Length: 361
Image (cartoon, rainbow, N blue to C red):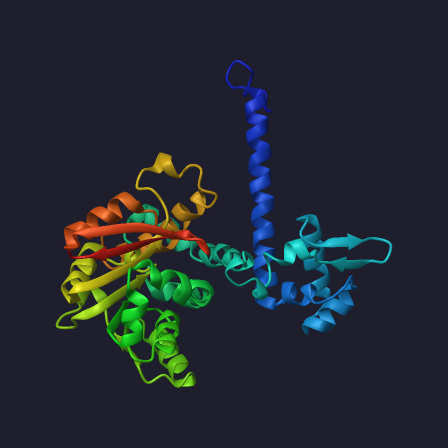
């Protein structure tokens, strides 16, 4: 501590403890960046298939440059993620760690989440200007965001959409099997739509999103799967008009990003059939800040909101709702949109989201 910061001014022990916490945050952030690199290069997947191996052996198996792999491995040893045998100079990824770091882990793959940190860091300087000038950023300033969101949502869709999520609405799987009309709002790269279309060939599906790039990816996947009951349209869901009625409308983690979410929910309510269902998936949080203090990912929610979700809404002249709009506000806005009955549920394979089943009755 400096001479100025005397014991009469601050609690020295508390200050030192806080400094230690800040250093831990800094070191953890560096580990996060390296975990993101390990995920994107496939190094965790390679390590999971190998016994203890040298950096050269690991690099050869992964098809990567040894010098970079060696330095990355050292960072992973420092982070206590990879084990190192100093005598043999070999590295090993414990199975207990691989269970949370490889693509085989499916929706449990936490390495995938680490990619948000370098992605968001890429817009740090423009965001600082937003602090000074107001306004917001455009989706075009996030070239990898759709790719990352697609990877993230695909893991949940593949693991739980058909078996766990759709059955949250009573009788819905049976109706889908018999054949109904379904729309997905803000479908992104369309994987959820294609999963549903493949599982329920008697039903018809349409996905709406304003991103031409994402819609192109969705159409390509549908074509590769030979799906004839799924189509995708470039459309701002805030300006939907004259569509429907749909027996089921879904929105997977897309409402809080909208420029005018209340308008989007009102549009959705208009295009849902009177006996239809709206299934909305959105971030699990409370609308009350103090209630979110114990969330393991609470800081992330407000960070991704500041660095992406809120700012892209403001960049469109929108409301800037924010990622952690929370269950209380979500229910209130659904009711204001015209949904008289709203139930909120959880899915075990998706601890980050809440599931809202809304009907007009």
